Length: 498
Image (cartoon, rainbow, N blue to C red):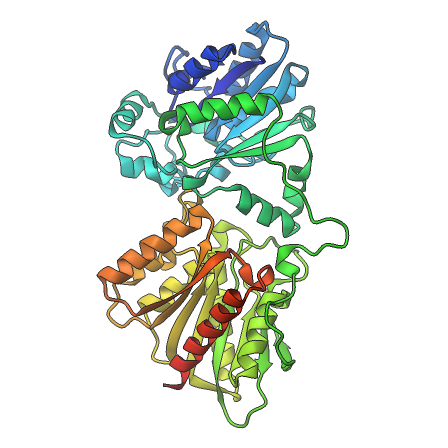
């Protein structure tokens, strides 16, 4: 078995790998937990020059001391940055690089770009020389989900954690490309918001930054736990690392030649074609009717990388929904908003607000009868409309929505927390399509929203789709799927005419 070098994330040293290292040794592996300068354990203390480069050298020096011919280099969280830097300098020694719930570090970018905790960004902007480690579960939760970490493990994590030197987070990672062809495995922690399904969905959108993930040397595993699997699921993580060293794991694939990706598959309903007009970011699908008509504005999810063609308002699902609304006598509106990455929710919210105003100003629309229908990650954009319901908003609908920001997103702005919005006094009625086979990281947000809705006695109609999956309208032609869409549209239009 190859040797394992384990590099811990922010605030932690080699000690954090204790149980995983023991399991790997029992299986016959050689294990070397890295001690990075300034991060506790047996490593040297931090000095004025402790930066990412120092941590890269720490890992390189450890590689040079290892006798085994092949090394599996494992990085958790921040640790992937020194791992990649070291692999770039010793590629001939590395058999595989394993990302454990770590972001896709980029050449020329700092680790800070992948840090979800906003308090870290604020502290560094204020000139802090080091970032104190979190002192509570809530503080650790801002860095990543603590799902599965027991109280005793959390107490030990907090007690042994040390401050993270500033320059380890702010110094850009510099790579030559020497390790670009090395085999890679990603270990995704579902409770922290990552899953194989979400990776595949992003790859199939055509994001050029992710096309390398379809290489046969790239594999994935999922763990049903939070951001610290070495504490919450050490046995499972060790098993995954052993399998990764063998080249096992799920491989992401693109559609075969001539096969459409899911988001471009035809809408599940055959709808009579209606007139369509485009103004800026907004398309209006117009019914054959006299006088101003109620309107439904459909809001897509994401992130959808900039430059993806066709854009969401031309995807069959959104065209289908808008045409369906128009065929039933309402104006269907779709909008291309700028949710190109997680940090872009404020821009997306501006685009949706502008689209709503454009729709309401059109003389063919009754400005006092409008519904908003949010899809997938667009669900977070519903919060403002629920919290401060304008008098013309008759209904909010949501299809397989994300209703709580995922833990690894670092999205703390209350404008994008629909659960918190349920405390408002004048909430609109809500129609929610829930799919049985929802991605686990999303299903938990729907459950939290519905629990809060019950506590606040919010008017929420849940339309369940047995066997349904995320984005079902493009892949499911079952009678149950047809009925779910018909029932949801009927309910939304019913709110518009009352």
